[in-house]
Image (cartoon, rainbow, N blue to C red; front, side):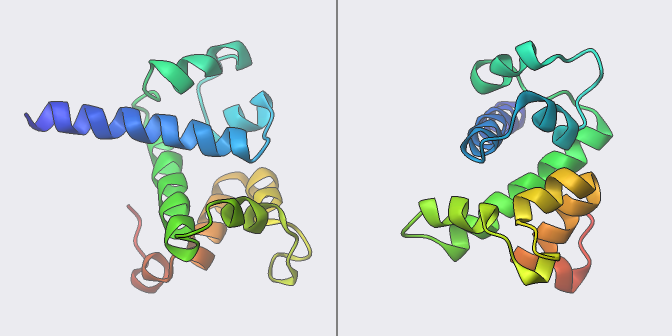
Length: 132
């Protein structure tokens, strides 16, 4: 039962992350980079992650997925009644990020960008110095 529950969570999270990345209007190359997918994964393969395939079980991919999951959860908590505000927040430039949008921070700074945005949104992650 544990594996079925874990598998269901993983497939739901894969779909949720791909949906968010699509909502953020990222192109395929940016998605590949942000997720640190293996070089064997091409842009044309991304549709598989939207429908049937889990992200590869690779430490670097898993770390990025955890950060994206944390960002999505924090955005849902910050904007519980208007999910479109999450998109607005992610794409609006801010002085806190040197006049870049949070999305641009993620694109420019990759893993460090994911961590920066997660720390900004999720005070419990930043407070406890969580590495998971």
